[in-house]
Length: 265
Image (cartoon, rainbow, N blue to C red; front, side, top):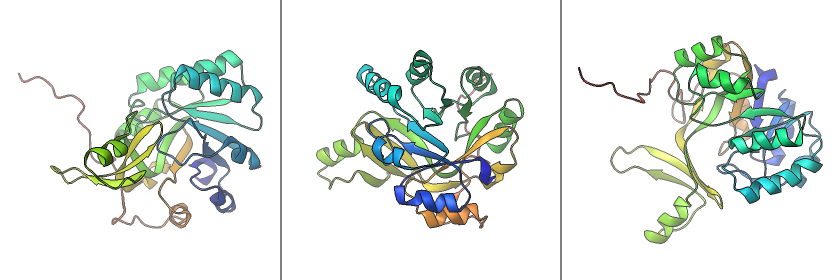
């Protein structure tokens, strides 16, 4: 399993800790091009001498953003690939004819074999949706290849271009925090909200522990999102400790999500 882990870096000082644990593929959230992650400057990213270095570009980009990214990529060296959400990044890489590994990361879209298969004809890997059951994931993995599966970390629930924490702070006279825990008054379900200048991401309240997923076929990368998780817990997970049900769960692996209700007969 460990040879297939792709780990998102939250703190630069943790890189060496993960490398000592045997991890070889590192995902760095590129400053100015991410939301829901701690941004890391390109200068700091390039300092690290790791063979499998990926950039994360996970927000919807404007035309100006694309132009800025284009200037960066033209001069970029030592990067193995890009994990991206906006399909404009795909067309930009093709326009520049860059030899980079491309991984499509759209949290809620890799939900069926047909769409996954289409994108695998264009990119090197596709993230599977984090709201699928184990049997659904198994079916997609059995019928496709080179997939990326979320293995550990807070599941992303939603992404908004709006600055929700700033708006709530202003309108309800609350103390502003760029990262906060909020609760729905009707269901009492809690979410971890993270905001920067480019929008707000809502994460699940509990850490998703997908240890069962290591048995899936045709997986290229098992993704670990370290956002809001200390390195000690990450290493404990890698070392195969049991699930801590107070702070971890198995997400939707045994909870089918109903996307559409059929018509009454």
